[in-house]
Image 1 (cartoon, helix red, strand yellow):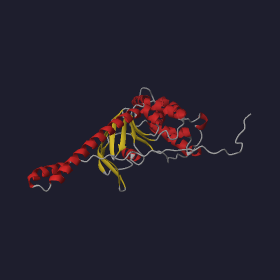
Image 2 (cartoon, helix red, strand yellow):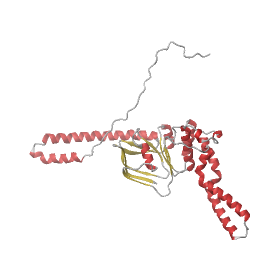
Image 3 (cartoon, helix red, strand yellow):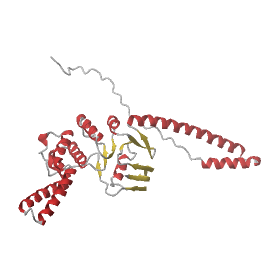
Image 4 (cartoon, helix red, strand yellow):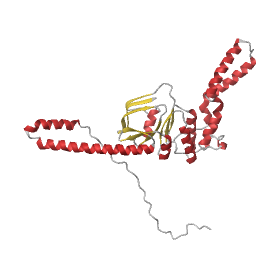
Length: 329
């Protein structure tokens, strides 16, 4: 569906990632993970066309519909909550109005006339398309999504201007889910959700008919929603099959293999350097020395980046205050 080839991106003088090859399929269920600052949000913006690559290419099929949810910053104004969600179905609402107009036209025309036949054919065509797109159920769809994301029914008639930033982001998420784009790009979608809304979103994504790529620091959410994990690490993209737990196991194995390869390479480099330094001045060993110098130059050095720093907190036991803090009877 979407293909990245040799993709790379810089942020100022800092290289975020390079040589990324990624084919995003129509049924993608991917979690994008990595330490802060590795370029996860930037990569999502590249996928939705908000950012450009510095290296490589990205290709999109014709007619693809993308839906992007940022971490925050969206604000909707001027409509009620329900009306704002209904804007997603503007095309269907126009079809609905045309159906009403066609019904009125038929009532005024002679059933034996050619004009009546033309209007009837148009009505049949529009009605079939309207039914195929669940046009008669759009209000029910809006209600189900709003309810799932925690909007009380009495709030549906309130203006969106009255809601806080967190609820504005819930509303933006609701609109995306109702649009059903071919690929959802969700940056921390659970940031503004409570437990019930998060559980509902997990179930919704499980039944979502198309693909999605999401960023989340909620490990349980990732475990239940993705079957593939892409990690941005050491300026590269690494691909793992399975959910977050399986990714952690595979990453541990990959790191152990890399460390073993690094040790073997360092041992070989030290052997070559020792031989070169020992016999460099001996004419009888010149050919062997040159051979080892060439071998040394051809070695592509394995780099082991430092371990990601982990923050630890320590909360010492405070001294007794000498005052009564609370009394219960």
